[in-house]
Image 1 (cartoon, rainbow, N blue to C red):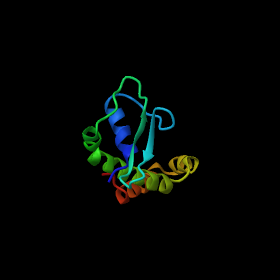
Image 2 (spheres, one colour; image 1 turned 90 degrees about the vertical axis):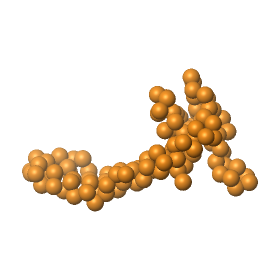
Image 3 (spheres, helix red, strand yellow; image 1 turned 60 degrees about the vertical axis):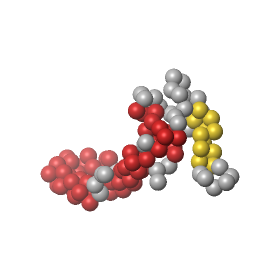
Length: 109
């Protein structure tokens, strides 16, 4: 199940807004174990989403979170940008082959 923050971010993006979870939207976990909910909503020009609107982002949220894991894995495997530039200078073909193998081993959803 996608995190509430991910679904809110996608909702805001779909409505051409950005969200700052330290100022615009504050989340809180419910003490009865039902999970997180929106405690404060201050996104200028955008109404707080309904539960149904948030739920409609479940699939996209799951995909985004899975892709974030892939991005982090790729970033680690790619290595330092300076080392990559050196590798490109020495042999762009070898670099392309290495990057392709990393992407193939870590596909996005």
